[in-house]
Amino acid sequence: MNKIFISGVLLLCSLISYGQTSIIMDAKGSDQQISRHIYGHFAEHLGRSIYGGFYVGEDNTKIPHVNGVRKDVIAALKNLNIPNLRWPGGCFADTYHWKDGIGPKDQRPTIVNTWWGGVTENNSFGTHDFLNLCEVLETEPYLAGNVGSGSVQEMMDWVQYTNSKEGNPMSKLRQENGRAEPWQVKYWGIGNEPWGCGGNMDAEFYANFYKQYATYMAEGYLEGGIYRIASGPAGDDYNWTEVLMKKIPLSLMEGIALHHYAVTDWDAKGPSTTFDEKQYFGTMRQALLMNELVEKHSAVMDKYDPEKKIGLVVDEWGGWYEVEPGTNPGFLYQQNTMRDAMIAGATLNIFNNHSDRVRMANLAQTVNVLQAVILTDEEKMLLTPTYHVMEMYKVHQDATLLPLQVKSAEYQLGDDKLQAVWTSASRNKQGVTHISLVNVHASKAQEISIDIKGASYKKLSGRILRSRNLQDYNTFENPNLITPKAFKDAKLRGNTLSLKVPPFSVVVLALE
Ligand code: AHR
Image 1 (tube, rainbow, N blue to C red):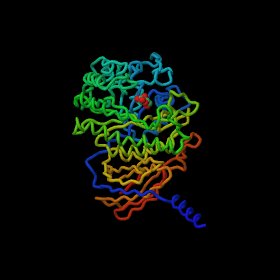
Image 2 (image 1 turned 180 degrees about the horizontal axis):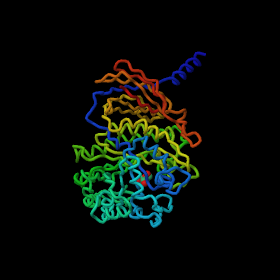
Image 3 (image 1 turned 45 degrees about the horizontal axis):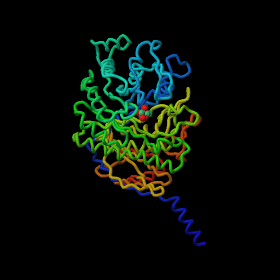
């Protein structure tokens, strides 16, 4: 009887027990701004990303569009304030010859998309379509140039075509194609994953190639110069960063990329919805590794660039699982659950806290591919949990970072442990402080106390993204299962803010 009573009490305690996390927030601020470009996106010619996702064609009578681009997608992305959009790849970028995608659409050549499904690419969405879309979205284009199968001349011509006002062959060609003024593209990637799909090069070989391209792109017809991004390492290849930093003069480079996907096993990535806690834990471990990767690559960069002139540009990140059953394996179409919300919330907090070096990042990818913010099915569209995280976090864009000291509870599974609470804080230009918190624990809520130093606040409000099950996702039949709601479980007493954050949820607080 006694035993039963004791185990009953223990069971109850474990059901209502909380992890304890304490945070000190320096609300005086810092001299660090969280670049809005950390909240960037990525659209590759891959699966149903461009065709069907963004672009449905000028002649489409079923789906409302502007110049062939879906109106619903434009409205959703405008609501995120997306600061930049990377295009046309990815691996596709190193097979892409931009001149195939200009001029009358019925005269454009077709190619085979060798990386993604072997499908025919008819080039109906090209440079004008993309750059005009960026204007509609009020976002900065980030063009990834072809190094793997292209040429320095081809890249120089692209820069001239997009950026030069007049008086040379490419500006003339652009004008003949109906665009008088240049678009003034600032962000240029020089190749993509040259250690893999971009040419299987080693770091030394690529560094030489890079210098050649970067030299001839020069200022890029842009006041203040263009922003040239060297293709960076995969994950923890610190030698790649070291070689680039050592061999490329700082005057030739503005950023170095980094790619890291939350994948546990490239040969068995696991399902996107029917995963168990072990798979969830493994994915989160990989996602949270981003903290270490950013710190260690930054440390290498610090040796050669102590003034932090060069940005770390994490231009591919996110979860990568098996494709949805019955879909083309080359199209990388996957569902998006609360697990993805955890990846997004924690990763964006990591980037915010390292914004002294991380100047830009691009979630892979925007529509219908990998950790998408939007999924479409013909005329239907839905916003994923990742979308809602991005929307809740947009308050951090260009805000001043507020440093935090975090003593987090742990999330333990078997012998493995992860930090349970991931958070960042900022103050925007209107003086509003925002704190974003993610509890990645699969079953335990967190009692969090925040000691505020250097400011006092009178008003508190908050929003939360949560769902009953980690595996929940929005469907075309039930697109609003997971959406942000008002968060009421926080109290402000003097300089202490106390809150209870449920398992696998994301909270953003506003303090005034
Ligand atoms: O985002 C999908 C692919 O992942 C990209 O094309 C490539 O750069 C990376 O390997």
